[in-house]
Length: 380
Length: 228
Image (cartoon, rainbow over all chains, first blue to last red; front, side, top):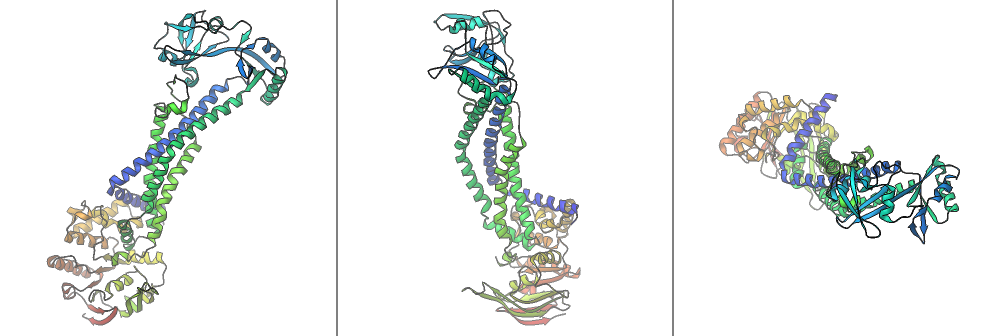
């Protein structure tokens, strides 16, 4: 059979399949709608989880290799600046910087902020820079005064000098950046103490050794390695997407049963049709090929539409439906525009989970029907 | 030329409901071009037609088509012969519901891989030939008995077969339509097609068109009359 004949044959079969499908519009549209919904949910969870993990790892890429915290009776405590100078002397450590940061709960707007002090703060005391989420939650804007209650209960007013650009909103949305003096004043932290230390290590191979050395030298500290944070993030997002999938697995199972029933049970009418096709000169392989195209037309359409909807949902509407579960506990949900990121592996997994089983379920029953003698139509 | 040699067909062989539909039928159609198989219901006409048309295999016996034995051929070859040699007209019309009359005519030709537009033109031409092209876009179930019959004839001709096989074609037609059907068969016969019809309708076997009349009863060939 020449290639052109083969192509024409497939075209003719597809044409017939499409007009056959249109005959049972209601049933087939319901099936496709359910199918699209399943692909949409699966793909949304998959896209969002991967994008969040990627986002988190991009953010953490700039983070120090080791963070050293001081522990007092098992609780995180402020660490003396002097530790930094000693740690810097450990061979392999390129720098050990002190960090000042903390969480602040704003009772007025019922929001959590992350307050940090940068190495160099370009505004004078009393000035702050805030993330976009903060301006949204506090219904405020650049140039306004923002009130805080200090650790001793005093009202402190800071002026918003800048709204931070949303490079990675997931992390910077709830940020409040301020000067060291303001931070110490607000939290009541004495000079000489900081929140934790950021330790940079030149050779990644040495990170673990150096962390052990720090632990030995200062048994009251806890060195946290960056890779561990990344792993924790991954685990959390995997866990969250797992929860979503468990919730939707009921729907998935219902769909599997529905599609199996639809695809595997050939009605008397369908059997008769196959009989007619065979009687008028179709080979068994032609019937199976037609059923293959039918399964593929339904599953591929649903797959592509579901995928497209999930893409729009996740990357254009910021996964509005699953946001509360997947993004976290913070009260300030960043209005999130995740950078579109899809891997071929994700698509392939989704394809093999949805399109392949359905198409197979469509072909198998027609196989047995197609081996029936065509004279069936003569006798009925 | 078709020769049937000791054809026997048993349904549900070895089961309690075993049924011998054809008992050792032997028939040489010779040079006959218009054959009518005549007999009451259950006489084995339809089964014999199915066997001649390569739709079903005989339990034993041989079928020779144009000096070639075809009864032992694998399914694929039988399908090819069925598609290229025979056009079928069924008692129940057997049109595919929900698709248009035009598509029903085109269906047997789909696996051949003919260009869609050419195939559609040929199907349209056949519908025009039988004066039914105005119903081309109608769904099969919307056609009246006479219209459906003409669509079925067009479908039987789409692959340009040399032999037309019709099983009780007038069973669902009134007298006028039955005469019209026989007229069309006469025309096709004149154009060189071989016609084999199974029927117990006098309009068919008394039409004067047949050149061979085969009488059947209880699965056996009772009489063969050469009318040529």
